[in-house]
Length: 162
Image (cartoon, rainbow, N blue to C red; front, side):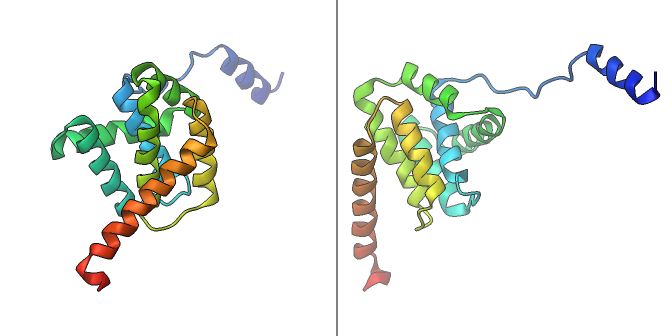
């Protein structure tokens, strides 16, 4: 038997390498991780989207700046280690009643649109997430339109727009 074959066989019986530890997933952390996933959907995780995530976490969960930063760090770690969105949406569905879920779609769209751009990857993620949360594509479209209207209204009221 060659040395290479012997090493391969030894590897089959070697203890599994330790898996990276993942923060315990609560409904709030799952929401935060999904916000991070939405921001990372097009591989452009930028400051505008991070600020939007922080704002959503602060408003939604009543957290101060330090707690928001800590929760976002945990959410970034969770999002990086979790395979698919099913686990996140399952935790969200366990924690959030159906009637409140459309508002969370608004939060996701707010993060996605924070940089003023919309990409196919983000649209695809929102179709998937909407479905996994038990909502329809139409619910997601209405949420996006509400967020875009609010953003347009704020921009129109900005002194720089005049």
